[in-house]
Image (cartoon, rainbow, N blue to C red; front, side, top):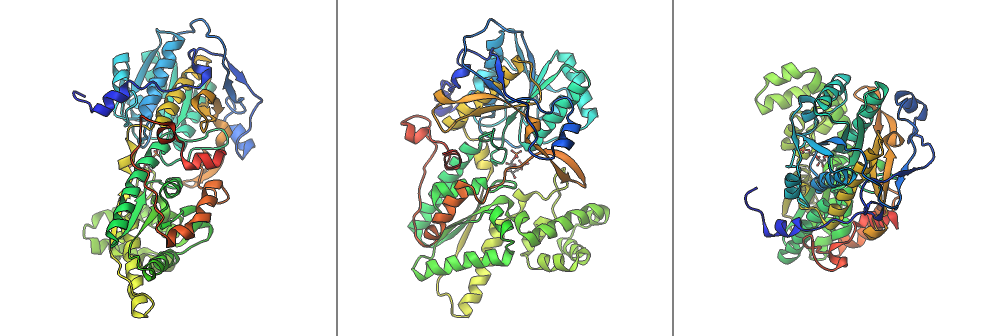
Length: 551
Ligand code: FBP
């Protein structure tokens, strides 16, 4: 980085806040609670994690700074999609380790778990860390989606850590990466390998949270970026009064981002995938609901509006879910024959002729562009890459078609013209909000304190974050406590329970209580850009989701 922006320069000087327990440094003794159990399937999980199961919740309490602790040599890995604040986790970890003993060292494994497996790393010095404080992105060391899950990979990890003298690993990732951190911790402990493993909760999707983990980092900033953009579009829609905007929002599976953005911006429509699944809605019913809202607004002279669509929607519509499952199996089973086809029409014909009756019917009802997107390459786990499916275009097209029918029946007299957008990558690397800057730095610092205590199989936890940082608490949650057994790729596997939107939760209920009004009225809220400096109510607010969930 030869030139940095004025904002980045000013933000470099920002000193993230820490929970009071850590203000004197990370060399602090943890208070342990009672033994814990897993989220479900206790017997099976206990059997799989004989050495790490049942560890107590740990809390760091404010006490006098202890004398210097043992120097630690730690490796850090960024895993999965980018999320604002990742650099601050590393900065907090670095500062925490140095506060324990100035001779502590931190290595960053490059491009995610691959860096550990291939022994590609960078020693993180104070100069490197300083250049990235309070910045967005994961470019300090890069990230990757390789899954760390096999004993062969664990062995390579051991070998490469031993070569660098690494005694501990910090894995910054989502539910899958933290599940794997737990497997790794168990493997090393059961094999008598003295490498400790600690995780940190990351993902803009907001679906790694539970009673102990209040939020995954990055959600706050990403939602603020999207809400700014949605607000701008709402204002444009209300100025020009001629477009319906269909906006798809990231979130691989859960609709937390769409819900939070709806609460922040009050659009006319927001679809929540979890509700679609619960009500077993068909694609036709979703289209009908949107068309009805368009008709109603048109009758009041408003031929414009804004609709939010969660990225993961398609997999929550029962008929689409079956179709996608069938397509995944078909494309895997017929990979050779399917791979030979280059002509799109031949591909579609091949798929249609191999699908069962119901799926073939659903497939045929989709616009051609979506049919082709559903046939694109799968991700490394054999799943459809939902961010590549243009659900927003599909819905806009299907609503337009339905409105034509209604017009022909004399039931609609308005004008319908649509614009489509997808907001995802725009928010994943934004400079972290004050919340994420503080939260992430505290998570990294807490991870250092856990390692200073010689703990393994824990996730760093910082709590009470709806209050000022002076009231935050921190500690470690045994990852086994978050596990349950789920069917994955034909086998029962221990995984961290993914937190979907709860339909009886306060954020969704607030949305439900307001959505009819928002659909008919034009009651938009324009949040504007993230503010880093200024009054508390402008720059130090928590997300509506967190506020509603915790208060
Ligand atoms: P993580 O769960 O790894 O944090 O990633 C989340 C996410 O941003 C999703 O919202 C999105 O579907 C996906 O990553 C996109 O993945 P990619 O970066 O590989 O395109």
